[in-house]
Length: 126
Image (cartoon, rainbow, N blue to C red):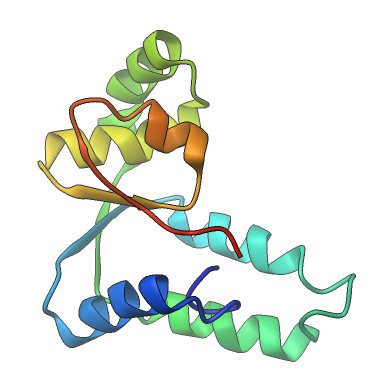
């Protein structure tokens, strides 16, 4: 959301690197549903029209992501959620960052704080 709605420069740089293939992005298979749900929240306040939200969803759907089934991640995500006090959804992203030795890019300060052992890039608040 920071890149495709807010245009936040640091988030936009990550998105550009993913689009260019300079960075391999990995996400759980629920990522597109999460993006759609987040975009939905911008419509009632008239921050985005339904058409603009759909255009931004298309951008997200077209990203060259490596998608990992949640079925593979669920046990590790649950363990991380329980031990680190995050949601199981956030545990999925944390499991990917730890399992792929990848950088977790997030604007969620709570998730970043729970990500001990992972590289984290904390995006600034908008």
